[in-house]
Amino acid sequence: QVQLQESGPGLLKPSETLSLTCTVSGGSIDSHYWSWIRQPPGKGLEWIGYKYYSGFANYNASLKSRVSISIGTSRTKFTLKLTSVTAADTAVYFCAREIPQYDVRGFLSGTAFDIWGQGTRVTVSS
Amino acid sequence: SSDLTQDPAVSVALGQTVRITCQGDSLRTYFASWYQQKAGQAPILVIYGNDNRPSGIPDRFSGSRSGHTASLTITETQAEDEGVYYCNSRDSSGNLGVFGGGTKLTVL
Image (cartoon, each protein chain N blue to C red):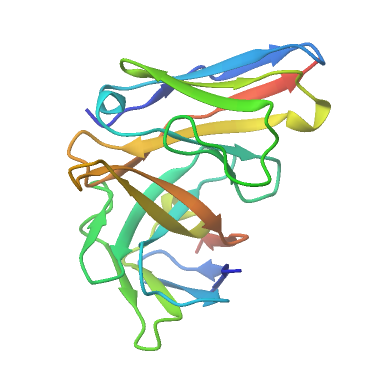
């Protein structure tokens, strides 16, 4: 079955760019949405954004100017980039597969994150 | 609106039934999904499409929606059900994701 694994640096300095990779095993990125979610220490989940398998992406409005998600050419990895990090970006970062559901007219009626990576801790500190 | 509102905490006696709610305007249009997260672990999906249970999730977990409120109900609650439960949906545009603030469930 499909499994996800995050990788990337655990420690960054303020103003640096965070780059995290999610490796997809047991499958490939040939359908669905591929997403990033983060969780600051002691806080709740925050949706960061997704990349649809065929190309378009959407991002949290509060991060939109700093974030991008891309899919690798092998279609077994997708990457999160977050520029100009600050201490507020300190969090556990999860990648997840997001499966869509459609109504009888073919319109999106909801999604769900059915597979998650284990998460990777990122600390921003000088 | 993009907000989903959950009660911060709820408690239930062992073996009893508990309902956790999530309110938001977008829930009138888009399905809710629910996630259980235990300390130090990644969340797991327990309900999707308002009321569907993934394979492997015990049937004591059920979901429903009425108007702008989605609910997760756990019957015969077990000690292992302790954790934080998050609801999720799309915002009113359908383009952006949003999570509720989470409800910490304590089993007494």
